[in-house]
Image (cartoon, rainbow, N blue to C red; front, side, top):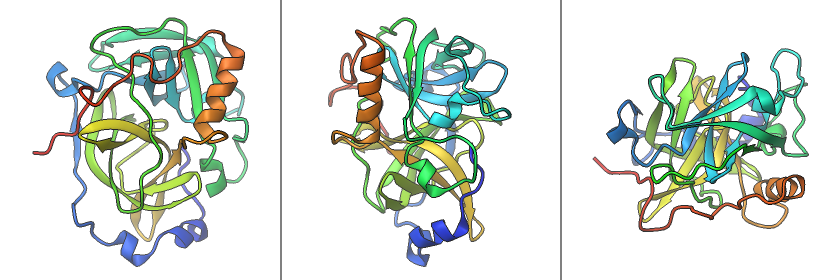
Amino acid sequence: MFRHLLPVALALLLTPAALAQQATPDKGLTRLDTADQARGWDAVGRIDLGRRGFCTGALIAPDLVLTAAHCLFDKETGARIEPGQIRFLAGWRNGRAAAYRGVRHAIAHPEFVYGGQEALGRVAFDLALIELDQPIRLPSIVPFATDDRPAKGDEVGVVSYAQDRAEAPSLQQVCHVLARQPGVLVLSCNVDFGSSGAPIFAFRDGVARVVSVVSAKADYDGRKVALGTTLGTDPGAPLATLLAEMQALSQPFHRPGEGGRDAAGGAKFLRP
């Protein structure tokens, strides 16, 4: 995960009002240790990258995992990690996964460039798709629907793994969109190394939909913020581009929405 973004770039997006206390305070992290706590979230999993660490990803179709593009690169050499070295552990917690899958294909957005100077522009294309070697078709693991990006000030949530919580995912039920520009969200969500690729959720009628993935964490005026890559719904948007590339690479594959969640079910944000 990228550590820092240029302060000037963040200053253009963040204002004192954006950094002020939200009307609804952010929630803390809740570790999803038990089956009951994790119910509805097992489509989020840990992506093991050989011996190079891990990222977080989420199923958006029975055989497609959405994550961050930089997760597909060796952080020391900059080389692409071979698909055969990647595993997706759906619902991983305390030494067991709800499903284990290898990887057939892994593609990064064609405009993402790994390495060099960190810049806000890289975040806009920090998106990747992983095609699993076998679809996951279990009643307890239902792929998430996706949606367009939320507005500034909206409540969102995140489910992620991280370096100090690698053995179970954690849910932050409420954080906020502090600012946005094309392709990028600045968020108040609590993320750390290993959270790269974690799904950012908005919810409609209580049903979670993926609207972004975690790209980076940054510091601005002493406040920790997260940066997310937005998906878009129009042709040519980052996710649409990736889906078209995956379809050309692997026929057939399952498009998002096949076996996905509807308004009657799926993971929900429950108010205390």
